[in-house]
Amino acid sequence: MYEPLTDYLQPLRSLKKVGVIRGEIYDEEGNVVKMTRPYMDYCPTVKEFIKAVIFFNEDHPEFKMMNYMRTLKTRGIFWSMTTMKNCDVAHADSKTILSLLMGLIRGEFFSAGIIGEYFCEGYIFKWLERLKQLDDKAKVRAARAAARANGASGSSRTSRKS
Image 1 (cartoon, helix red, strand yellow):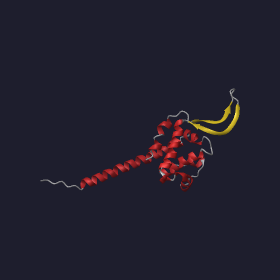
Image 2 (cartoon, helix red, strand yellow):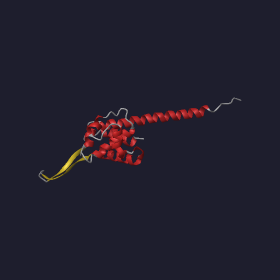
Image 3 (cartoon, helix red, strand yellow):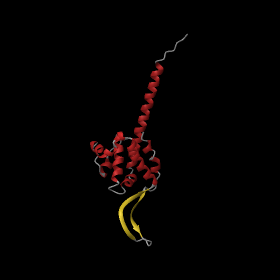
Image 4 (cartoon, helix red, strand yellow):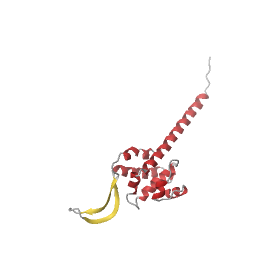
């Protein structure tokens, strides 16, 4: 279910650089001629990942990812760099992880480069790995349920010997 996001684990891990801070315009001699609001110009892979999170939100309204602040607060995680970094996600549910991702993306509007910081410090990888764990567990449960269903339907048949 979370493959649209977890499929980015390997491409993101292989990045040497997530982006470049921009905000200054230079003349031909290299002198700053204009300052704009600083922003992070992320590499294409990071930009695609950000879009994937946004599209996941649109495709799965059941997670209510835009209510990330409420979701995080009910789990004792406040929308701040410190608590989002320090939260233990080892046993977190998918809604918590998705809320962390959405909260981080929304945080980029207020703090340029925050997504890059979370990449460099490994938090996004921990969150994606947890989603992958949850996906893998769900697949195992589904396979077991299918096996039981097949076993139950197969056991109801009686063989007749002539």
